[in-house]
Length: 147
Image (cartoon, rainbow, N blue to C red):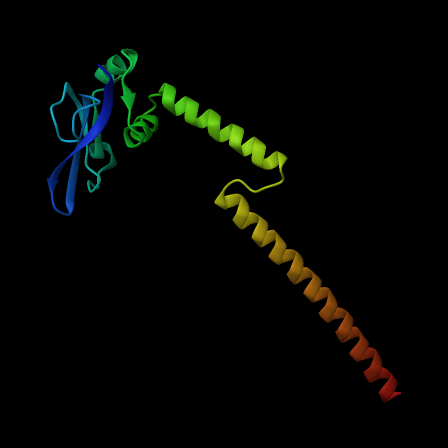
């Protein structure tokens, strides 16, 4: 039996509340669970109450081979629980980043924004230099005309 750690949605319309459960991978989202491992309330203002996890039981299920969903994996990473899948994902991301840099391409949005700002700064510098040269020419012509 393949076990997954995933979220089941509870609450009402426009007021989501999720339970983090260990489930058989073949069951539907809100179907039969093996064990309740915690809950997540995205609208809770208090950060400490937003996510409640039974870390000991989560580690137990991970040791047995349970695979967390992407969203649960992100929550676990924020609470310092490393999973095999998260490590693989980070390794793939680093490899993709190194390949992109080797090809001279930008990898993420922050790098692209920084490159655009640097390009704009260079263009502004060139424009300022051209304007200064033109202003110097006009000043020299004005001196000749005055003399």
